[in-house]
Image (cartoon, rainbow, N blue to C red):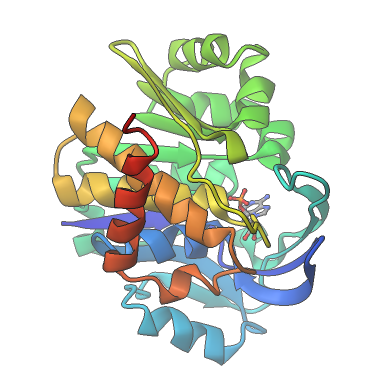
Length: 299
Ligand code: AMP
């Protein structure tokens, strides 16, 4: 079993109450991969510019990711600059520079086109659609997006929803795309727009899952020191989709367990800047924290 993730590989500059870091390796696909690799073989589809540091490429390769469809093009790597304040639940985007992303048309090998588990991480919806048309036999397609694309490519995103199985969003994004402020109403509206299932991440307040058969909700794993939440949503998605890929089935029990893995994976991500914590993670760390998490519910 393996998974394809399409998204950004980025140079991130972030400021949180705990410090500032510039040009860290990040991006939606990179954060996703750090968690998904603990469950399955990850095929990373993205583009970087000729300025992308070689040490970052080696770092990603060392993590066991298949980088054969990570394109390197003339121009600048995608850069994102953000800031967190107060409860650190939402990022304030200060600057987004698309660079080579603006010309990206993802290409995948014939073998990769046969992969059944697909995650379209946060990137331009036109690029997400392009990849989807290349895939032969998807079994589970997840999709994430963010305000930047909801605001600039709304129509393309709504069109895409009809072709996916699970839409992954944070609470603000789910409200923005559906026009509903209540999250259950928002989830229903997003299903009516085409997605079979909806997963809404609520930062420190956990996650809400909705499909026509059941609603499921989990709190976040209690973390005392949140240093940098950048990529927590993507890490969540990596744990969630990674587990489902390994399980090879998408029934209610598997979904609930996948949500728990996503939750614990994300809890590691917020404990340090960028990929520092998740890149060192082993499956045993996840399992240990998962059993701690389960204890939160035994009363
Ligand atoms: P998250 O905190 O899970 O929402 O994801 C943050 C990651 O998404 C960062 O590593 C950024 O590089 C990346 N990112 C930020 N803005 C965008 C965008 N407009 N498109 C794709 N990726 C982005």
